[in-house]
Image 1 (cartoon, rainbow, N blue to C red):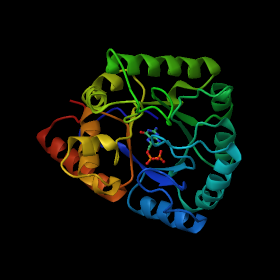
Image 2 (spheres, protein in one colour; image 1 turned 30 degrees about the vertical axis):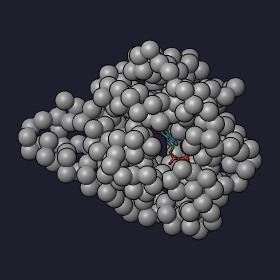
Image 3 (spheres, rainbow, N blue to C red; image 1 turned 60 degrees about the horizontal axis):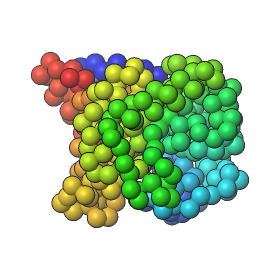
Image 4 (cartoon, rainbow, N blue to C red; image 1 turned 90 degrees about the vertical axis):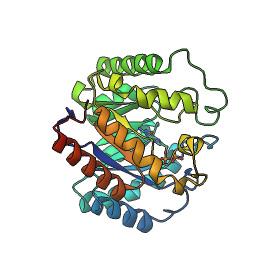
Length: 280
Ligand code: HH2
């Protein structure tokens, strides 16, 4: 998918459906397939273009889960959801077994916060023929926020993403199937996150669609005021999504779909009325 920014157009919205007991903002809420399905359909009705199903939390300090546990959490939802929506479905996993099961059950996108680092992942992505999201992370979720360090965060993230795209291409993933994501909050301080948000135009210039996931993340509370509880970070989440749209990102990954869609539509309409492309 490519999304050249055009005046009056807005990024796609990817709605988060976490079927995890421990996600940082909504863990444990969608413990049953019924609850998860109802939530996914509500996000669909609220205007989500993509529904991103995740069965393992990547929050700082989260404990890993086995592939079979992750499949048990996500597959019943994807199987139930597939015939009920025309939206694109995405599986948020770093495990090839989970991605394979999800895509076989009808998922369209493999969203991998490790950028296909698992052995055999790039080859599998090519074989599955699905879209892939390659995200940057420094370290691993359990420890990534301990002491993130970069000399030039924007340049290093851009170089990493280009290198992972090259690996995917070499394995046979089609160019138009590759998305890149700077990984806001994944081994990054507030300053790193802000440098990446300010530098989004440079990432867009890499020529791949960019996915931005800033929704409810901790950096919002670090800027303040308020937002100690992830559910109280709506204003900051929307501000980040709007900044992403102005920079020309292809999609934003969010928890609050209706509010984000409304904000993006209003910003796009204002920019169109001004005769300004959202990319500028
Ligand atoms: N952020 C989270 C999870 N997956 N995938 C991409 N591509 N980009 C992101 O920024 C991203 C992601 C973390 O958010 P959430 O899913 O709400 O929490 P948890 O990982 O605790 O389930």
